Every structure is written in structure tokens, then in C-alpha cells.
Length: 275
Ligand SMILES: C[S@@+](CC[C@H](N)C(=O)[O-])C[C@H]1O[C@@H](n2cnc3c(N)ncnc32)[C@H](O)[C@@H]1O
Image (cartoon, rainbow, N blue to C red; front, side, top):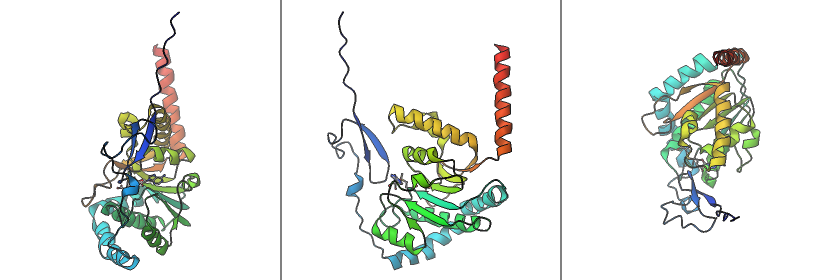
């Protein structure tokens, strides 16, 4: 009997680029020249900034916060929160966890608009919910980013401490967080409210940056999450693309969940009869 030669396993490595996207590339760690592969590495990113704490906060108050508040996107989002989230008796929010905001002072303007949006959402939710802690986690935060968030009264934790804090009374804010990290957060618990990537697109096969096994696991986590939540696409924001391919999700009530699973059961039993 001829023995089949074992095919060498393809080794994969993850490389995070300077904008925070994780690329999975072939080859064991250390063997890929990321520069020739066209990937700008995260640690090469300059933490140089034109800001100090004082000048950033001034710019935030004069430009980012009012530009966000006056946008039609902010107004549509507020209406959605007032009509769908605040009246929902089954939704309780006690903390906010923000994952992957990006650097406000050494990254793109999107991060500052996201911060402005998050603050307005917290203000609105605060009309009904007692949100005791607002926690930020992003490995690209510079010391100035941390100082800004601390000065606003928020907590900044080192990766991966925030993941294990997610629970059913969390508002998870994670626009464009890489799907592997999004799945890590959603695996812990289904947050009461979340803003994050459009998961349908992921589930339909756009998980291009993940290896097969990780992809399957994430898809199941995302499917469960989508079954347990209602969602709407985020309204368009005309200044940066941070709302693009992003959805807002909130927990369905128990009655809604039970009703839907009875319909699903009914459909399954009809399919069995037809066979
Ligand atoms: C594609 S960027 C999105 C940045 C910004 N939110 C936006 O919409 O433009 C993904 C962000 O996730 C961050 N990130 C990577 N690993 C993370 C982790 N373990 N926890 C939290 N954030 C992480 C990256 O540093 C990066 O800032």
C-alpha cells in the first residue's frame, strides 16, 4: 500500500495594519515581509499629533460634537432611540463598553465623530437608564487618547479586559470592529443595545480576513445574536463613513422570542409533513 504523503499544513499569521484591520496571511509568524505584502504595520503608526489635551477638547467641543449633533444622521438616530429603545420595558442598560474606537488624536476623524455620537447616545439613554461605567478598549490608544477619555470621566482598559465585562445590560459600541473581536465580545453575552458591523454581510461570506475554523465559530455567534435582537441599519452620516455597513441592534423581548420560535417550530413541522 502506498502511503499518502502528508500535505504540509498551511500556517497562517495575523497582521494588524495601521488602520486596525487584521489580515490573515500565509506563512508562520516572522516569515512574511508585511511591507512587500503592502501592509502598513500598527507599530509603525506615528503617535505624533498636533493636539494637546486642551486643544483636542476645544476642537471636540467646537467642531466634532456640534457637527454630529446637527447632522441628519444624529437626528434619525435620536428618533430611533426615543421610539424603540427608551420605551422598551425589557431593556435595561447599566454600562457602556466601547471597543475599537480608533485613535482620536493619531488616527482618522471618524473616531472623533464616533466619540461625539457615543456621548450624545449616552446622554439620551441617561434619561431612563443609570449608566454607571463607560469603558473603552483599543490597543491603538495613545497616552493622549487615554487622557482625553479619562478627562471625560470614562474608564480605559487594556486589551482584552473589556471582553469579559460584556453582559445583558451593556450598551456595546463597536463600529467597524474587526469581526474576530466582535465575535469575542458577543460570545460572552448578548448586549442590551449594540452598534457594530453589519453581520449579515459577514455571515453571507465576507469574512475574508478569517481562517475557515474561526469563520464558522463567528458565524454561529452572529446568527444567535441576530436571532435574539431587532436591528436597523445606521442612518447615513455625510462627513465620514463611520455609519457605513453598520447596524444598531437591541434585545427582543421574551414574548417576541417565544412567538418567533413557535413560528419556526410550526414551519419545521409543516416541512416534515410535506416530506
Ligand atoms: C477598522 S478599525 C475601526 C476604527 C473606527 N472605529 C472606525 O470606524 O473607523 C478597528 C479598530 O479596532 C481596534 N482593535 C483591534 N483589536 C482590538 C481589541 N482587541 N479590542 C478593541 N479594539 C481593537 C483597532 O486598533 C482599530 O482601532
